[in-house]
Amino acid sequence: MEEVLVFVPKKTTRIKYVFSLVFKDILKVNCDVTSDLDEFLSSDRAKFVYSDKPHSDDLFFRSSDLLFHRGIENIDTDYVEHEGNNALFPVYDSNSVLPFDVFSAIFYVVSRYEEYQPYVPDRHGRFTAKLSVSHELNFLNKPIVNIWANIVRDIILNKYPDFVFPKRTFKFVPTYDIDSAYAYAQKGLVRSIGGYFMSLKNFNWSEVIQRSRVLFSGFKDPFDTYDLQIEYQRKYNLKPIYFFLFGLYGQFDKNINTRNRTYRFLVKKMGDYAQIGIHPSYYSNENPELLHKEIRNLEEVVNKDITQSRQHFLKLVLPVTYRNLIEEDITDDYSMGYASLPGFRAGICDPYNFYDLDIEAETKLRIHPFAVMDGTLRDYMELTPHEAIEEIKKLIDEVKKVDGTFSSLWHNEPLSDEKRWKGWRKVYEEMLKMATE
Image (cartoon, rainbow, N blue to C red; front, top):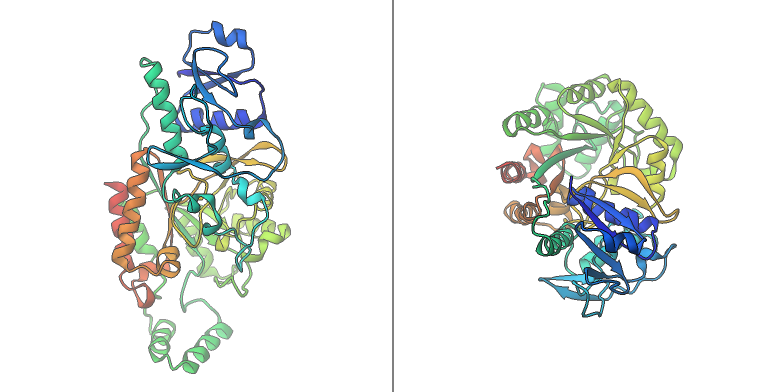
């Protein structure tokens, strides 16, 4: 594997992290970071300087202070336009190959630096898309970190045309959240009576009829779309990941009783076709003991370790949520995305390691960002199915441009193609076609 040599005036954990992310994770080459100027000057490898001054006539990326500091400070999110996109951390040095500190910009976005600073959360305690610098600077819908990494790659190739960066390939990772496995079935007597009462109270006769057909006449539950999902897997050669809500019933947790035999059989069945992860319940974010219990209970059903997770309601509070997951031996999390808008919350479309700013350390927790969720398009943005398809196409095209990983978040309900989800099965099928063609 090819290797790039970088001179920095001082090695820090942030420096090591961001250069490993850019070169090893994204560009797929090695990177050797040195503070020994003599070693750097005598080397004939592909190399560059990352500092506040050139030091030599080699490639020079002018640095700001962010990667040489520790702790969380108020950051000036000034920006400069470069190649059609706004870029953070502008630098004013004619010797610099870029008008902005690309490595600080990448670190700021990927580490979610802004989420460690005071902000006004939404009613679920979440950092919202419209608070983000990515939304403010109009690059939320682009994998800007991958774009910036490719700019670095092109600069190096221009200087060292014989240097070889491996060819990357586009990947698609479909994921499902099973918040409510069934609409009417397996809910138990009390919940079923309550459902009838609410339908009658609202004069919703069609729902009364449908519930009765499912419960008494053997009709298939509208949310029971699992055979269709398996059919999609075979048709499009998919390798999805399922996240099952496995907590107690509550205001925000409406799934089936975890002791229900049919529900447990469903989890086992889907585990024969796909990977299974935990969908921690709403209040587990503030209750590590609850999280522990839910993971252990799910492990008991699938008879294997649970190492993958996605937060219910995307309740992600940094760094607490990730620390709780690490404590439970979760190795991969899929919560990095917004509920209210599609796009790239951490600016990146590929998996990466979580960097804990509070302790200034890279962790082994692997973060898998997703780009789009069904509820975002239907409920938050209020798009029609046709408009949703167009929005998804734009995101897939952006990821394909950087040969990255496109990950989707879907639920079983929209595939019912009924009521509020009428027409949304086609949206999902079109996404599968676009992502696999």
